[in-house]
Image 1: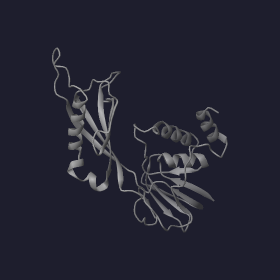
Image 2: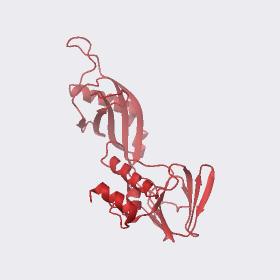
Image 3: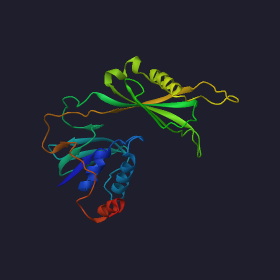
Image 4: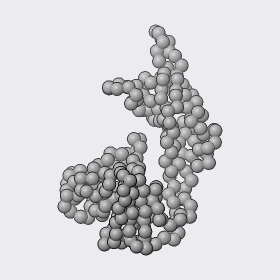
Length: 255
């Protein structure tokens, strides 16, 4: 009998490594670049891959759990495979996973929203972060633009907000409003547009690129089979098992 982990966020990777379990996922859920977890995510994924615990890598298109029979059907590259004799399913991400019980709602309707903005004029300044920029915009983050190659100090913008699902659909929280408010904050902080002669500057010019939404809440289940466990406690990994996986993690931790 065996257990499997389903999902590829930071918590599923931690759990799979801590307990030396195989991991299956449809789409990875990497932390974004402004968290302190991105480097850990990449290292955990690397450790699990080298140890052979990440199965089918990025080729899975859907998963189907049968808790009664203890089976997991995997669809990958237009083929299928069914794993049997599974005694426990640890679920961290329900995306494209069939056969799970119906959830009863979400733990929160709030979302972390990142609005990525290209700066066309106003890229040179000393700010890396401006806090409390509006009632709903938590902060403006400035980072070296990836649109220009090489070493430079030219910066684009990411605005972080926390919005409910309903607020995301309302105009007053839209990408356009965020862009306008970001420009107002930059001007108030003394940031200027591109130089236009001695002591002269063009206006700041911003261009919305994309919006990313990361739900903060997770599905809530009041009734599910005993062998299906949703989001168990996942600790920073110190694997119980030794061998190669323990060696990889130990070398990362400096043991």
